[in-house]
Length: 378
Image (cartoon, rainbow, N blue to C red; front, side):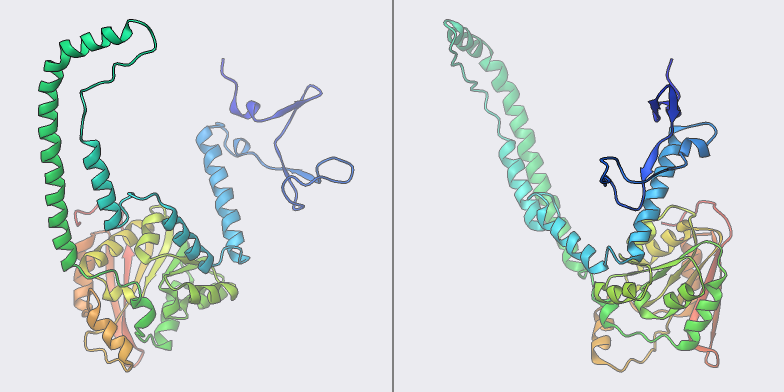
């Protein structure tokens, strides 16, 4: 009979069951002068928290503890965003050649596959055992006609397959040439203004949200710091590691990530709200749709998705921002377009807009999640 997992995760001493323990703050594996581990303190096992003692509950508890420890380390500044950027770059450089992360890798893999497509039926017959070589040569002679027949068909198939892959690559390359390259610098170079009144309005709007909040492009406004000072459970994401380092040194919880990447990584229904601001307005229409749909999946029922938008006739002063907007994959859109886009992307949201020159110059669209029903939009 299988033992209860709780019993398996205990140590037996003097006939009694001793619960699992953990090292104190002295550090993992530290030894006292007496040769014994430093102070131990019992931890509440996940099995004690879950009456059924299921392995799933234990794993969930361990993952939660790991997430809490990582979050604590982030707040202490142990993982600055610039370090994460260098770690990502180092990892990408160490990816084996042919991993498919670039066109050079693709062609390296293509040439390797082309060489591997060749088959040789002239099998070796050498042997150190007397008489075995003669037997092998006899078998090879008897089966040569059969293997040659199969080889001709396989060679024809692989040759046509490699030609097909090369033709597909040319067609994909022609499509890639029409698509503008990822404009990761848009968030850094475009100075889309967000007024202080809009900043305060959005901060007050999200301050009482019950769940966790994500502030996208957090360097675009002061909403992250305002919400953090109010005690809200909030963190920001951005792609500028220099700005993120400064925000983290100021005690803010930040992540080096794009908006879409972060929203796709969070658990469905785990957020109380999402603020979209900054460079997302200048993304392609297809990417905006993916961002909105991912945000709708990430927030819980009753949660809010707040969009800070600017009109197409927005006037910018600096030349760098003008150039970046002109070369961006997307463009600024009217409020009515954003509201229609929200309705088209998912039926889970109920949207309204707040705008006015007396209160704030931008348009703030508040979309509240009303249901968990799956939408048909893609």
